[in-house]
Length: 422
Ligand SMILES: Cc1ncc(COP(=O)(O)O)c(C=O)c1O
Image (tube, rainbow, N blue to C red; front, side, top):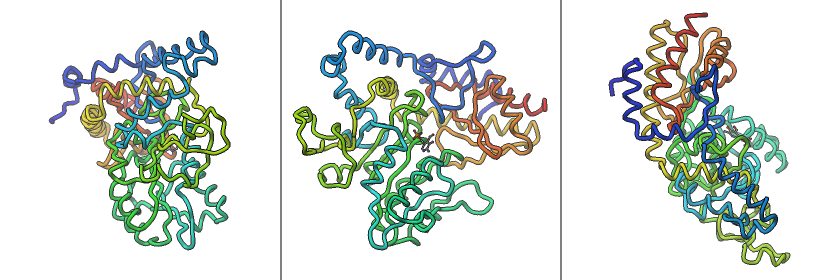
C-alpha cells in the first residue's frame, strides 16, 4: 500500500479498519484532557472496560456466598482457571490440555526448569540469547548455581554480530550445533523485549530437539502479539505473563504450556501442590499426589481468582476478534508507523534509527542519536506514552486492539515538534 503522511489518509485507514470499534472497549489514560497515544502495550496493556464486571462479579459472590463461592458462585472458584485454557490454547497454538494459568512468569519459569532442566553427565549447558530479559538471566544463573554449577560455565549466550542490532537465525542454529551433546536446554525470549525481534521459534525448537535438548520459550512479548504454534513446533514448555498484550492488569497471573507428551508422565520431576492433584479426589485430603493429566498438574495453589478474572475478561475479547484479525491489523499499523517514522526522519534530517528487524510483531524500537532523554520526556508530557531503555532507545508498540492509524500520524507530528523544538 502507498502510505501518505497526512491526517486525511490516516483517518481513511481508520474508517476501513474492521477492529476500529475495539478502541472503545478500553480505558485510555488522559494527558492535558485528551486520550493519550499509547505505545506501551508491550509493558502494560490498557484496561478493557469489561474487566470491571468480571472483578465485580467475584467480589459480589464473595460478599454474598463467602466460602460457598468455591462451588456455588456463578463461575465457581475451584475450577475458575480452567475457563481460560481453551482461549489461551488458541492464542499460543496449543491443545487445551497443554495450557494452564498460575503464579507469575518468573516463578513459572523456575517451576518449569525443575521439570525441564535436568543436567546429566556432560549434557549440562543452557543456551539463551545475550542480554536476555534480566529476570530470565537471574533465573538461569540461580538455577545453574542450584545445580552446583558456575553459571559462566553452563550458560551459553548467542551474540549479535558486531555492529548489528539483531540475532541471525543461522548464528543461533550454529551455536546449538557447536554446543551439541553438551546442550541440556534452550531457553530464549521468543520476541525480544529490547529490539522487538521475533525469533524463528520453529527452526530453533526443531534444531534444539534434534540435538537432544529440551526447548522452552519465554513468551512475555509473544503472547497476544504474534502467531504461535507451540504444539506443532514441538516446544517442550513455555511461559508468559498476561499484563502486556493480554491486557490483564499489572503483575497479573502467568500462563504456561507443557507439551502433551509430558502430561501422562506421573513421575516427571516437578514441584507439586494440592491444586495439581485430580480434583475428583483432591478434597479427600489423601497423602498421595495423583496428577491431573493436563498442564494443571504444575499448579501448586488454589488460583488467585481476583487476578484470574481480568485475564478471563481479556480472553473474551481475544476470542471475539481472533489472532488472525489482530495480526492483520498489526502488520498494517506497524508498517504505517515505520513509514511515519521514515518521513519524520527525512524532515528532521536523520536523528534516529529503527533497530527492529523485519521479523517483528507490534513493537518498533527506535535508537535516538544524540540526546534522547529530553525527547522522550517531551513525548510523555505531550500525551505520547512510550518507554525508555538505556542507553538511548524508545520502544513503540502499536497494539492493534486500541491503537489507531490517526494515532500514528499524530505521533509523527508531535515527534517532529519535539525534535525541531530542541
Ligand atoms: C521477557 C520478560 N521475561 C520475564 C519478565 C518478568 O516477568 P514477571 O515479573 O511477571 O516475572 C518480563 C517482564 O516484563 C519480561 O518482559
